Image 1 (cartoon, one colour):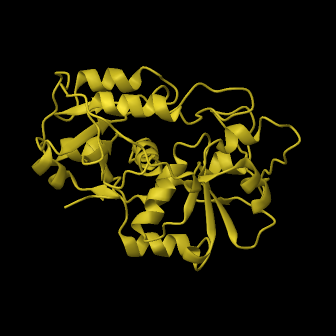
Image 2 (cartoon, one colour; image 1 turned 90 degrees about the vertical axis):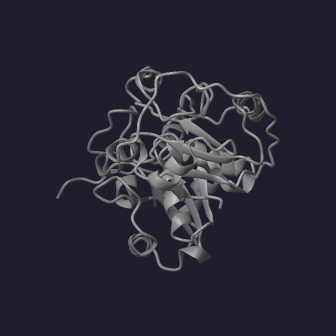
Length: 284
């Protein structure tokens, strides 16, 4: 059996020693760059490999880009090969934030043509809550070869986003919190607000009280509040820097909607040009 969106804690437990599985730990705190590796060192799921959101799943910010540009394909594929990833592996990614960071690697592997990749539903918290152990020993792995089959149709360009507000069949969804979207406050980026025409859909909307993804029917119901017939529209997903936007893309795919694109630069790229319009919502 292959997993293409999410995988349960029980199914991962049954396959944690499966040589055909490869597990990645993508824990992150945007305010503490050492949090991920420190947490991994303190304890991680057996056989999991740490990936750094800032340095593995992104490259350094350049002038005019967002905070998390995609890494060079060759560099990232070399890392995947070094970790033991190949086209036959079932990849599983987890974090401790409801999939907010794991979704980025899920999307990136899809972008590179790897279909058998899933996010651990409920993340590390679900794993621990159900009595599963963590280990502190480093994971040993054999180098393999990962060959990408790149699908750049999954990426929305800045021009696509600029045009979205003028195209009736395009929906722009923003995964950031309501406070950041409305322009009330933004603890991450220097300018608060949102792109004209963007619709707020905070990533937490996709999760239940246990930080697991809601079922397909409830996800469809929530997305229908944005627009009906989403399968017939072009969807662009954005956030602050192209990380948590992947959460909405994952939720859409669980709901059976697979036509969403990622605006990688997202809000942090949009605001690099003072001539681009910023929308805020004044409290009534």
